Image (cartoon, rainbow, N blue to C red; front, top):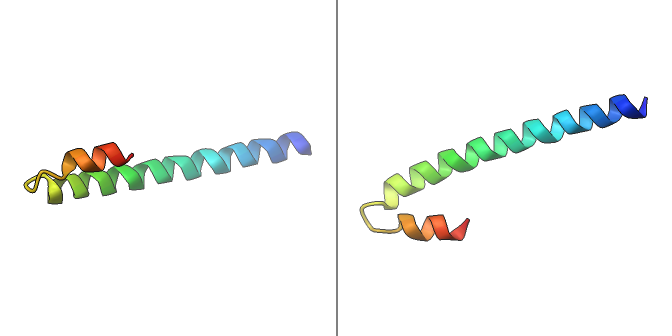
Length: 48
């Protein structure tokens, strides 16, 4: 029982982290594209 529970938690966190990473990279890409001409892309990279 506990083993199955642990595995499902691992899956949950793995999926959540993957989703977060995807969203973050999408957001960073669009932010860099929008702020790239203004020179703000380096600031966005440093904030991470």
